[in-house]
Length: 253
Image (cartoon, rainbow, N blue to C red; front, side):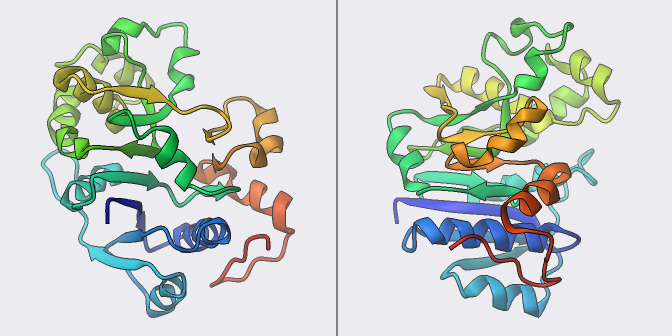
């Protein structure tokens, strides 16, 4: 295989429901593209059985332990570096898919990395592009690595430097949260700069995250709409109604 879609998610709370819905929608539009599901820690039998119906490979991993990152779930994306495929599309569970994800692979195959800008950062008055050397931080929930460039994502190293106040964006992140939340998203531009990687930002028709309230009403205008978990139930209800199975969520036919 030269490309793969990958979800890295928890097996508890709302995440199984969100993941099954996203996966079903993905398969509505592409039945053959390889998909791997990396479940962190808990994996119930019903969840596993629901997933394999969609012709996916399920991988169970322990919560990745790194000093200072014990409770920070995004650090588990380090497992992406264990994959052998040169092109990897990471998709968060809290996504809705309205088209063929293979379009993203084809559109951005000429670059090493693609994701959506973290517009929330640029909208803050205390933001300065120089914090990340002129490369915008990105929304890491949906992103593509090509040409094996995932191996050059210095996730652990840069998250550590951000927490220790040793990178230009450290103070900015600390002003937002004293836990330096979102640090994995800021680790990416530093890696792109350090390794001279080619990158682009997703076009709105390919992937979008909500920035203003009206974005939630136009989710289907993108191939992948990354709702964020806090908005997921609202988007699901808009699309499919109020009824939600406790163990299985269907997408549109």
